[in-house]
Each structure stands twice: as C-alpha cells, then as structure tokens.
Amino acid sequence: MSQTESFLDSAQVSQCESDVKRSKSRSRLGLLVTGVVGGSLVALYAAAAPFVAPALRKVCLPFVPATSAQVENVLKVLRARSGTLVDIGSGDGRIVIAAAKHGFQASGFELNPWLVWYSRYKAWREGVHRSTSFYISDLWKVSFAQYSNVVIFGVPQMMDQLELKLAKELPRTAKVVACRFPFPTWVPERTAGEGIDTVWVYDTRTFKSHLQQEVTRNTVPQQEDTPDLHT
Image (cartoon, rainbow, N blue to C red; front, top):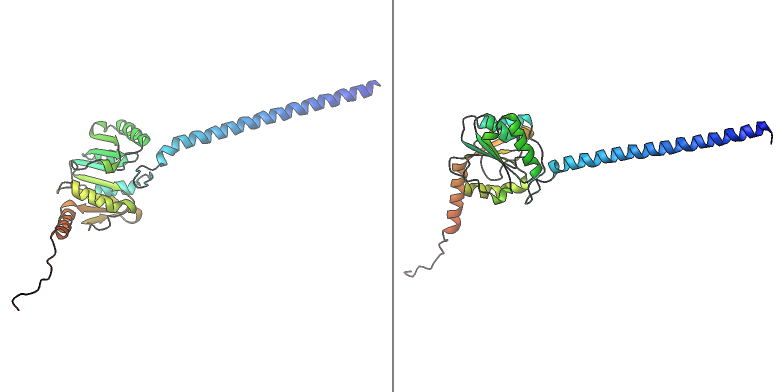
C-alpha cells in the first residue's frame, strides 16, 4: 500500500470517528433538551393543577379568579356594611383580603388546601393576616350562622341547594352577594356591574320570609270538602 493510500485511509477513519462523535453529541443534547422540557412541563402541571382542580366536591366548581371589576362591585354593594364577612369558595383569597382592607373581619372557606395556604401567605404579605381567616372545608359541612355578610362565586347547579342552606342558617340582618350567577328564586334588592362582573345583592329578611311562607303552606293541612248534612 502506498503512502498516499495509507494517508487517505487514515483520513477516512478520522472523518468517521468525528461523525460518530458529533452524532453522539447531538443525541445527548437532544436527550438533555427533552428532559428539560419534560421536567418543566411536569413541574408546571404540578404547580398549576392544585389551582385549577375542583374546589367543591358536591358540585364541580373549578377555581376561576375573580376579576378586578368583580372585586370592586362586591366592595361597592357592601360599602355601608360592616362586621363579619365570609367568602364561600374563597379561591386565592382576593375577596377576603380586599374585604379585610375595608374593615371587615373576613373569612374564606375553600376545599383546595393549596389555595388556602397561598391565601394565608398572601394575607400575611398584604398585612391583613390578623383580620382574615382561611379554612380548608367543604361548604356543605359548615354553618354560616355567625356571618352577617356572605359572598359566593357559584355555578347554577349549586345555587338552589345553597338557597335552602343559607335561608336556614343566616341571621335576619345578613346580606348575601352572588357573583357571576344569581340565585334561582330569590329576588335581589339591587345589582351592580354588568356581564360576567354583575353581582346580585339579597336581603336575608326577604328570603327568610318567603321560606317561612313556603313551610307554612306545606304544613297546614288542606281542608277537604265534606257533605252538608243539613241539606
């Protein structure tokens, strides 16, 4: 074999080895990129899933943050009110925190523990942790008898059941503010906002009176027609 042929063979071998190394390098880089992207997606899902998971088991109520306009409308209709306030399905705590900043002793009930922990941290950061409370609880297992102001971001499937619960538990001086969806049979005393930012305000005395009338109507026995014996 001539020196020229030997040199060409060596060059070809070196080129092949170089190509193999580049191929392996690209393969490792591809695996690294895939791992980073996959890990990021898993981390993102792990962080986001608790915030979008259903907050109430009896009725599927996913967490949808209140808009700034909704928060403002709630505070607007409760401007002349004071005392205790509860946000049913409090999510990330923004209604409770805003109410506390306006003088309410505010509480939130939320089934999702991640959202409750985040709300507590947010209240501490906003400086209202002494006038706020957040509880991990199912709304159907809690009594709201101690609250004079109630805020609810509900869905239509739950509103009829919630009507009965609140009518039985709330004091006659309480006000109820429904956001996004009104109660099906109660008549609001006023509304504020428009579209998805609309809020409906209900007076407890009104719907308690209606409930009492309904109970009375159902418990009073109907008089049956009886034959007149004197004719």
